[in-house]
Length: 165
Image 1 (spheres, one colour):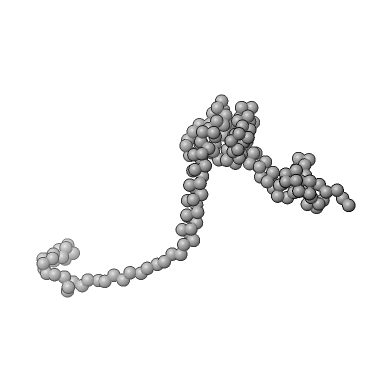
Image 2 (tube, rainbow, N blue to C red):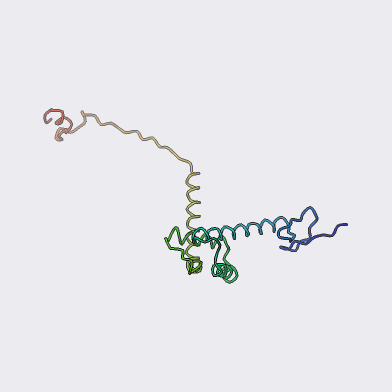
């Protein structure tokens, strides 16, 4: 009988057909998916920083700040990316290399609130677009010239060259 591998993420025993390797470590399918998602989020954060700070690669300060925010504040890499985007695009803040990603710590909660408001608005818009439209037809009653009181002046008649009734 083959020796069972252990998932490095959750500790589950894995059959040979259930194991997946990533970085010389063995994982189950769900742990591998989570690790790949986190790796992609980190790559996106680094790419965003390089593009918006005009850098080839992040500075030591920036990498240190990212690590601190991840470990001490428990911020995800995706949330950090969103916060930097929020500061730049919504608030119009300038991203300056010498300060690194310090804006994240100061604007994280504000960006989180903005994100939740945007999600609520999307939800409302989808509810509105799914709502059934009802059309109501209104019949308008026409008033005839016969029923008009004689004390009123017909302006249309005056414009056409007629006189006062």
